[in-house]
Amino acid sequence: MSKWVSFFKGRCPRCGVGKVFVSPNPYNLPLMLTTNKECTNCHLDFIPEIGFYWGSTYVGYAITVAFSGFTFLISTLIFGFMNSLNLTYVLINGILLFIFCPIFFRFSRMIWLWIAR
Image (cartoon, rainbow, N blue to C red; front, side, top):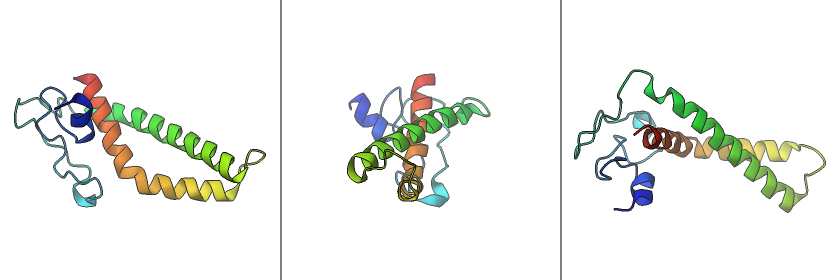
């Protein structure tokens, strides 16, 4: 399996087979935060120490800032909000961030795990 495909499917950074998250659906809210202890295939420890994923908050912050900048650029090009920060942009961006929050959470954890491993 390609490294990119295994990343987007939430698979192990070493072998690309084992699932990192218990539920493959990021919108399964009760299981959204639950990470498997280790890879079922190569036994890579997904939680090597307490607080390991604290670093992923920085990655998540960078992802949301980049996404907000992108939505600002698109809304500026479409609606022409270059002169002032409009309430419409803030509402659209807030709604989109709320919708994509579980996906950004998963991506930030996967990026942090892939960097550390």
